[in-house]
Length: 99
Image (cartoon, rainbow, N blue to C red; front, side, top):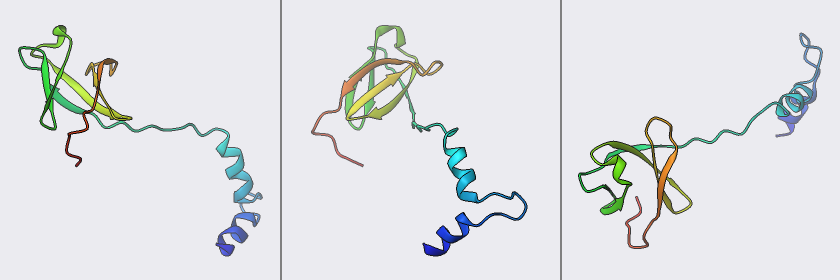
């Protein structure tokens, strides 16, 4: 760790500035990145999707269509596949198996 600190404070011969200084400037421009994993599900003819052995309702407009699902803070988010806008959410039951 001491070697990394020493090298980051050393002035680079080509750039004529220490990497640590450049990194501090770059940090101001960095944006947070949130990665969401979506799974696709087909809504059945009565407006339900299946996830981990449970059934969850989806608005009737999505019957027989595909939707995306994702997890967020113990909630199942059901999203429009084109806009990724949340259609509805469901609290995940305690009886579910974790995998």
